[in-house]
Image (cartoon, rainbow, N blue to C red; front, side, top):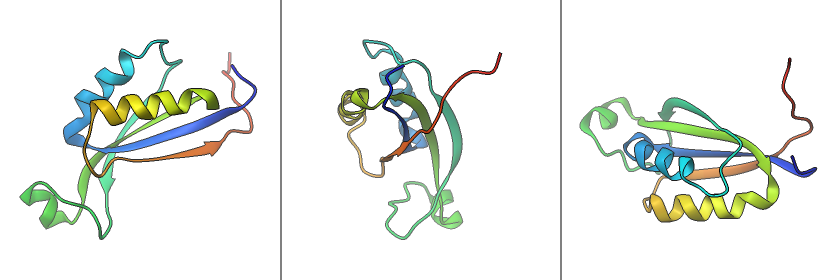
Length: 103
């Protein structure tokens, strides 16, 4: 892996999970891997789509996290922007000090 690696986190409304996963799974070149987590998004600026979410005050979301070369991030974000053009998709990038696999 490239010496400059980053952690990319993307948080999306649950309603776009299938489209986003399909987008990520069909990228060329392929991603080295990623993790998907279910959760709830909270905040004052959320557009809560369902009555249940409005009652709870939270949006069902999923989070995708991946460790990858920094240079790959723009193409991934553009692919997601194209495949899932909707509000309430957030992302952030963090430095990674070390990455490996335990054997």
